[in-house]
Every structure is written in structure tokens, then in C-alpha cells.
Length: 108
Image: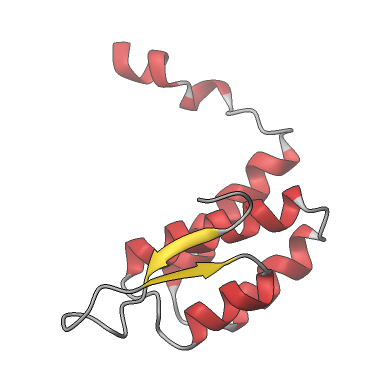
């Protein structure tokens, strides 16, 4: 993350070059997903979650932002699942539910 943007390695250029891409707007983030600059289920999930969180922070509608991001790669399960977690966190006011508290989980 870099001041309201996501900086990522453009996976289309690998392995010949390591090129960084800056995606600041929701449109740029959707384009990065659509054009395969972001590949792989875990990377897509994380990128989608950060993109949605940034959109919410900018005051954009969470559901329409989520729908737009998901439309860029509709079959990406991790993309949808990770964005759903962002929506749930937003609805809880950014708080984790008690059963997900890291100290409680660690202590068993």
C-alpha cells in the first residue's frame, strides 16, 4: 500500500522483468485484475480485499465496489471470499467478532 494505492508486481512481465504497477482508483484495480496483472488465488484475494477497503475508505459504496471488482474475474473464489470478509468487517464497524480474537485463538 502506498498513500491510498496498491503497488503490485505486474505478473504479466514475469519472469523477464520485475515491474511495479500502482493502482489507486477502483477502475485501475479492476483493470489490474481483468488484464491478469494480478494472478493466483491468494494474490487475487488479498488484492481484492485491499481494493475494497480503499474504496470504502474513499466513501464509495461497498456493495457496488465489491460487484465491480468481482465482475473483473467472476470465477475467482478467493476474490469473492476475501471481499466478503471486508464487507463483514465494515458492517461490524471494523471490529473482529469475539471468536476471532487473536489472543483467544492462540490460547485455545
